[in-house]
Amino acid sequence: MIYLLDKIRRQNLVWTVSEDYLAEGFEIFERNSFYEVSLIAYAYKVYDFKAFINFAKENILNLTNRFDIMTIAFLILEENLKDELLIKRPGLKSYREDFKSSAIRKNPKSFADEILKWYYETEDGSYPRIHENIVEILKKIRGVKIKSIMDLIDMLLSIFKSYFHVENSTSIEKMEKTLKEAKKNPEILKSKPTSKNYLEDFQLEKYNIMSSEFFEESYENLKVVMETVEGETGESDFQKTVEKHFGKNILSITDEHILESQVCTGIHRGIKIHMTKGDFPSESYYKSLIDDQKSSNREFFELNNLTYKRGITSLKETIKNSLLKESEHYKIISSSGEVVPSKLWKIDRTSDNRVFKKEFLNDYGELRVDILLDSSASQHERASEVATQGYIIAQALSELNVKTRVVGFNNLFNYMVLNVFRDYEDSQYKNSEIFKYYPSGSNRDGLAIKTMIHLMKKSSAERKILIVLSDGKPNDEVNIASFGKKKLDAEDYLGNMAIYDTAMEVMNARNIGINVLGVFTGELEDLNSEKIIYGNDFAYITKMSRFSQIVGLFFKSVASKLE
Image (cartoon, rainbow, N blue to C red; front, top):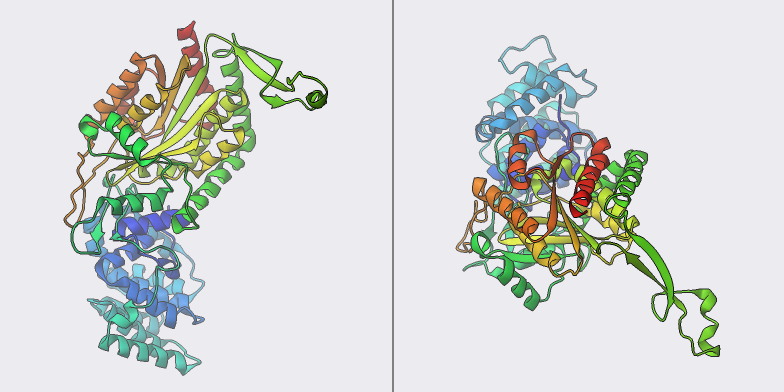
């Protein structure tokens, strides 16, 4: 089956394969399958492909047969890059076979379909009875070696002039003029603005924060950094980059340093903390990506709206009848709290200023719940499910007036980002912020849990619960594929060391009375790691329809321990 990608995943895949975060414009090929996007992305790595994008925008996209020409350009790239690409990314072989089979089976409805079909049909060198022009074009494609973008443009122009009907010779003249000027001065094509419409200026021009789950290999935390100025890349550059991607830091410099000194110790020494609420100083490309993901997550929820709302109601009843079954809410008239309109007449006429009502709760102790969402790129394929799961728990708790905080965590460079979607005192309205869940970067589960424990200890609540939604794969390679003189002063966080460090932090939480549940959101092969980390208190969700029921069992278990 051919695997198609949506807008966000196409962009992530291009960034990952090209190792160039400024790679844009690939959309002009109008190619959406996994293999096609991977091949185009690899062209950015091998050639100065932005120059070709600029050429195509000026000379090809205004033509009525632009898709035919761009399809030929794709096949020239296929002929020249496929062998090298498949050696470097062997996981793509199956995707290419699927794409090839699909192209061959398709009933051609255009020249683009036909040239694509016969390119793959004739890979063995034999040419059945097909149109002579197509045979000649295919032989040209197979006979050309592209060493530069100028070679690619040369070949396209040659095919265009020889085999396409051109109503207006101006198009060819314009192409020839552009090519002639570019050969004399290659900077002409490079100078065309390509990324200004999408990205702000960067001190760090090239890097990739997206992990590559797209391949059968493991590139869990590929981060490519290239300096654009002489000397070392300063810490402030990394800080600015993190802020551009995730929003403003809500901690003061003093509070940030105090928090880091208390939790960023041992294996986590050198890691810095960026706590945000996802607020950006202005409209930005990164904000638009998050907004797109929010729409996608929300759409996923709405598709099964009734099922999920029933799940919220069911979970709410379970919590009410277990953790809150001894609770009693009562209200009294007070001098502070919520205004009672019928009492306002007293203000000018009596000395009784009790015109408010205040709600009190009698129970075995106040309950607070923290929900921690693994927001690393390995969760990207499950983003909407994770966001929905977090929302269901938060909505059920907040409808019962249980103080709830929801935080996403991931890592970029030597920064751990904590994204506070909602806090204890926020209204139910803030639960919708959870749909802004946007996975990227890597993850230090142990440090995230350690930090949440530190923050939870400040609460006077007698009963505390921490629910962690994670794939059981803590993994953060801080200095992988880093260029330039600046080496980040932090240790990699990998393998068994990371798993057992996370397990230790879970044990530390339980030792001080914090009940911890792990909700497993990963692949079956990583289930054993989840068991090591969370012991018996973890939930493995195989069907979203049973999510509320399974999490409800945990709340019942916690309630029985507290009795």
